[in-house]
Image 1 (cartoon, one colour):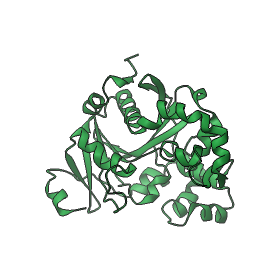
Image 2: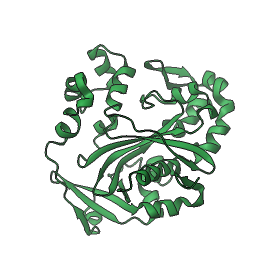
Image 3: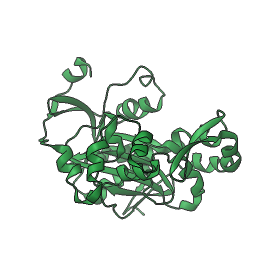
Length: 301
């Protein structure tokens, strides 16, 4: 993080942390007999495929365990550009906590986004793209946002949609092979075969979600915040970008740099165990205004 970025931030937050992983993850009774698995492997850099092999479980079983750390909420409906979606909240961490870009403070939350009408796309198509096993067993999974909430602000460490970002490799034959989820494993599949099976559905994917996935996930966050009532601001982590990421138009740059620019988000510095993390923070009213009448939340229908 550059000194100039920190010098421009007048809003500084120093939340209490304690033993965050123990308090918020390992001691969570929802984990039950999975606690030892989490304590041993959650933040271990060993590839998940190797961890699964060492643990004697399939990759799918391992990742589903790492991604399901608290009860799931009831689906909350919203719509974007006339397309119905739902968001399902989980007051727990997902496997992305291991990527080193997840400041540990506040209360963890993971927001999963689904098609409101799962029959818009074949379930086999959306499942093939979900090689992180994030769907929680529900049809029509599209993407997710994850982070923490603290004192009225949702601090997102990330937003992700594999089906939106990788659709050309998955369903339009770009390249010879591509990784896909098949059952409880991630395997290399023929790009041509996938295109033959699902290529006709790509126009529906693009006009309903792929072109607008960042806005849809913002809408999912706003729908969750409105339901809670006590979360009124959205923060987006401004982690240092690699040279490859720090190019205008790349997915990472669009989400973590260009979006805050469009929202005009001021910076807030959150200091966790002596380490500073910069967030671009905007009110959810500003987020909703940015999305305009394309977004409809519960109560607007």
